[in-house]
Image 1 (cartoon, rainbow, N blue to C red):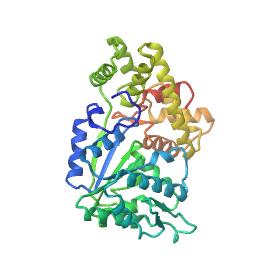
Image 2 (spheres, helix red, strand yellow):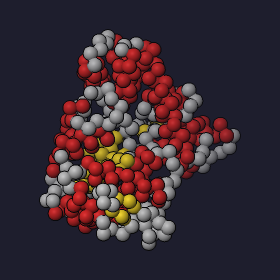
Image 3 (cartoon, helix red, strand yellow):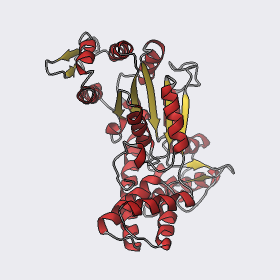
Image 4 (cartoon, rainbow, N blue to C red):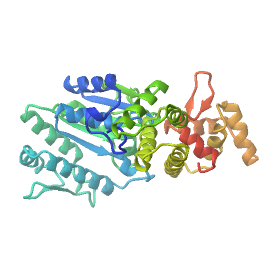
Length: 376
C-alpha cells in the first residue's frame, strides 16, 4: 500500500523508481562493494533499499543512523548498543544461518554469545576492552564466504555516524572494502553534502579515497507522477477524490513522496480529502521539519541560521542579500567567510539549495511554510 508511513519492504509497494531499483539490484547482484543511495529527505531511500534487499533474498543488516538524529554527539556506548540490537535482530531473522553466524562471531574481542544465539557487546571501560568492530566485519565476511553468498551491511543516514565519539566509520568501511570480500556495503544519506563531506571519497587523506562506488540518486516526483501516485494510492484504499484536490496536494507538497504519503494517510484516516485535511497534514509536517531544524541547530548553535531561512522563505535570494539581512538583524558587519559558512552548512544538511543562477532557495515546501511561520 502506498499510503503507509513505515518504510516499504516490498517492491509492489514502491511507486515508480524502476530505474533506480534496477540499478541497485544489478549492483548488488554483480558484487559491487560500496553503494551510495542519495536523495532529499522523504524521497524513499530506505524503502528502495529494504525492498531491493528483500527481493534479492540476501542476508542483510541495516544500522539506522536516525537513532542519533537528535544528538549533537553520540557516546560509544550508545553506538555499541545500537549495533548489539541490530545484530540480534539479524540473528533472529536468519534462522537457518543463526547458529553458524554466532559460532563465527563468538571469537570476536568484546563479544559474548549466549546459548540462545544472542550476542552482547562490550563498550569499555577502555578501547582495549571494547568490542572490535573490524573483527565483527571479518567474522561476518568469513561466514558469508563459507555459505557461498554475500551479506549486505547498510548504514541508513550514514552521516549521522560521524557523531559517534572515538569511532571512524570511514576506516571501518575501508577495512571492509579491502579485506571483507564476503560483504557489500550500502550507505544512504538525505543530508547529501554532509554525506559527501563525511565519506570524502575524493580526498587523498580519506580512508576511502580511490575506492570505486556506485551512486544512486532519488529525485522528487513531477506533477504528472505526483498525480499518478495519489490516484493509485487512493484507488488502493477505495477513496474517490476530485482531480482539483489532487492538484491541490501536488501544489502544496511539491512532489516529495513522503509528504504525499503523509497527506494520503490523513485522508485515509478521515475517509475524505478536502482543504482542511490538506491544511492539517501540512501543519503537522511543518512541526516535523521544525524539529529537524532544531536538531540541526544543536550542531550549529547560531540564531543566524534562522535569519537566513526566514529570508529564503520569501523566495530565491542572492548571497549578498542574505549577508545584508543578517547584518541588518544584528547591527554588525559580518565577514564574507561567515555567511558562506552558514549557507554551506545549510546546503550540506539539505535545508537549502543553490540554483544555476547562483541564487539560494529552499526546496522543501514544508520547510518554507515552517520558516514563514517563524517555527524555523
